[in-house]
Amino acid sequence: MKGQISSMDRRYQVFISSTKRDLERVRQEIALALLDDKYIPVGMEQWGATPLDSWSLIKRFIGQCDYYVLIIAGLYGSIFRETGLSFTESEYDYAVESKLPVLAFLHKNLEDLPGKKIEQSSRRKKMLERFREKVKRSWNVEEWEDEKELPRLIASRLHKAVDICQRPGWVRGDCVPENLQKEFEAILYPSRALGIAKIVPDGKADSRTMSSSLEASTEIRIIVISGTRFLDGYRRSIVKAISSGAEVRLLIPKPESEFVKDVGLSERDGEDGERRAEEIAQEIREAEPRFVEYLREARRGQPRSILNLGTISIGYYTTLFRSTMILCDKKWGWLTIMVPPLRASESLSFELIRTGDECFLHDCIRHFDRTWEIVDSRNDVIRL
Image (tube, rainbow, N blue to C red; front, side, top):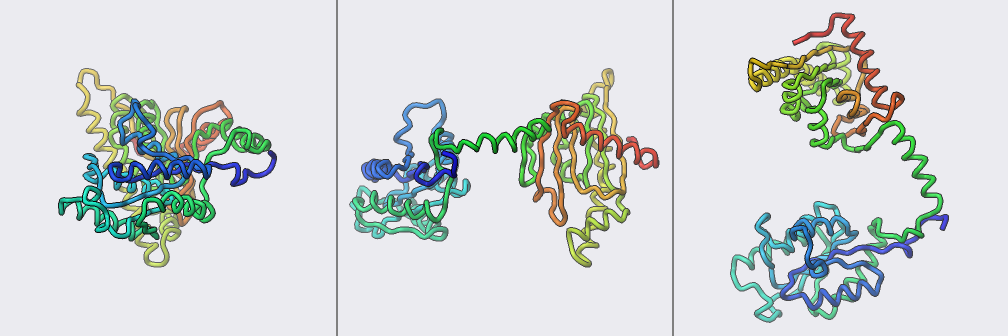
């Protein structure tokens, strides 16, 4: 196939969530009905023995699904200790958190159910009612009375959901367009050659990777606008790096520069822009005392006989540079490209690794070092 993948080639995975004791039989019938309609039903009863605990397995399978089907009758279900809620409600919350389309089917008249299929304690009745109301507030629910209705009803509503809310689904390997490999190569090969390991749309670095990269570095280069959030967030890792003898260099703008005023105005209008500029300027002034404290902390963590502290230098620039760089040795880096009025948390970021002397990481290091030379030549560097 050379064209686009059609809906006929896709199979959608559907997570079926409900209490087990009262709805086990109808769950099986629903699963068979969905299989007949070429859906892939998923439910806990299918998994058997696994090396994972139940909740880890539930999250994994929900994360792999395209749609989430919730069926609520007269029982609340067994309580999951980690959340204090039933497993069914915990599954629902995780599906919502994972942004799955939810199709909810609630029994219309609970008083018509037999006694063994209704909660007996007032506490569990309240928990069930609260759960039902939570679902109703968020979704257009479907009410049902006869279990025999559910397989056909759910299949019908899924067909509509596929049309309204399209999902990736699953396709056979031989259904992938022949030109897709060429498209991948056109996009992925240059990125890999440049050493772009990951592209992140919201500017949020993986904290473990950032921390481990900082702690293992002998030379850390940082360019930021103010740096307060970064320094506070990775204080422990920076202190550890200094304790191990790392050289840390920070480039930040001069607090009183026109550049800082322009940044404030680009993020705010009028008087709010002036206030924002002063906020940024104050954050910049706090960088030096923070680093002084980090040095003290690193010194306290070492015996005097083997004191091997690293060094900290701060350079103040005045050029219009709106990106953030965290460069660890010549091996790993993080680049956030900020386009006003967006801030770092709203901006595109790249995780960089070294793939040779012509990689993107090398270019970022060269830019930092050249900027540092200029700043140092103007006597705008302080060494702590």
